[in-house]
Image: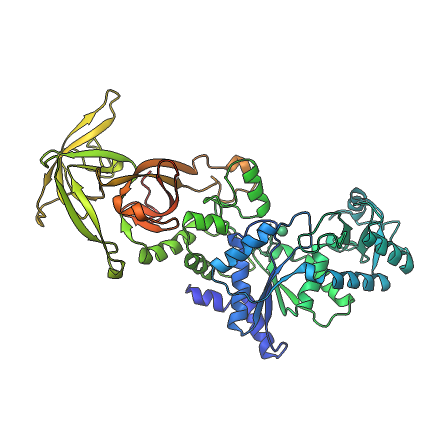
Length: 547
Ligand code: ATP
Ligand code: MG
């Protein structure tokens, strides 16, 4: 399906169009509400993309609201990084809010519920609350504290706020229905005590609202029209509507759910990413194997490719797993157009051109891009000794990929034809060098079996190549087995090779197509050795793999 059709006709947009036609709202208002307890990942971007573009296309606005209601989990550095990633992706957000902006208002709404006999201070501890709540198969039981008087509740809640009790000693609960088939509606907790300094409000509060309580109120206060979230919040919608129905508030947003983004052979939840870091399966939040924005950036993904991906995945209510190749195709499309070509040898093997004099040197001027002439030209050198890739040569005739063998003629890309004469092996039988003859004339009629890439030994610089593979062996690594049992032990292979000298001036973050290899991004330059370290972004196509 055409990507625009997918996106312009999704079910949420249909609802919005309908609402606008019926003049239910004069202006659409959406929001993206990340909890700053980790870095932004591709799933979040799906959510932001949906909210942002709905607002844009229907002439509305989209807020970003940091859900900072739980001081134990949130950190300033996460807020900073989320802001940075949103900007890097190209979203232009004017309104940034924090749930903590509304703490006083939310507190007053809790008091309103108490006064309406719709909330009470409970003294059961968390274990008891759980036990009293029942299960899907058994009904819940009322807390012995459920029927306190309004005045007692008001007094205790005030004392909770004043810090008169210990953490866990009391909490405020909504008085809904302990017999409800929806467990979430069995008197959910609205406020709990936490003696933890908050990144915004410091020690002003020692009671904090639960997500379900603060979220709907924040939406309503911001006059959000369509509160779009993922499917796991479907039960929470009952509570969302219950709270807004029972407080005095002008605006009552409607919640709509879509399916989460899942990508095969990977995970996205912050909780699991944290686990992988703790178990040292990945390095940090910016490990290029993980689908955080900082990881994708380090890997070499561009904002355009990520946005293109979001525009292609569609918005539905069906849970599904997206193929990794869709994301890879998006970066290929971008880099095919926008990255310069260059040659790099990942598994070097030396070729000696026997008929070229020792000191011979020729400069060849070649295009940086086959189509886009604006990318200019560069100089490469041709000498007696060159590196080619081990995988472009076989010392046996019966290789199924038709690799060149002794006696074959090969064309060196951007240069000359050579004939493989003989090979020199070490005692272990490994190939050390290949001796070739160079047909040092460009001859159109000359028949060669393959064009291969190469670099001059004299004019190359050492480089390390970080070759990434999928992080897990299972399409859905969270299914059945323990996550850590499904880890692909070969998700990173490091190779030492060479790149053209022209990359000496390359800057961190530069992306290249290494001809016949794939797309690579310069990740860092090692201090001591000046070694360039490149990350494999993706191979040249889905089938092709050289390792
Ligand atoms: P995580 O599981 O990674 O902790 P979360 O849902 O707890 O995710 P929040 O910071 O609360 O993360 O999410 C902000 C918004 O991003 C929410 O609306 C949430 O539904 C959405 N979101 C999170 N993960 C995905 C995903 N995989 N696909 C689509 N939307 C997502
Ligand atoms: Mg969360």
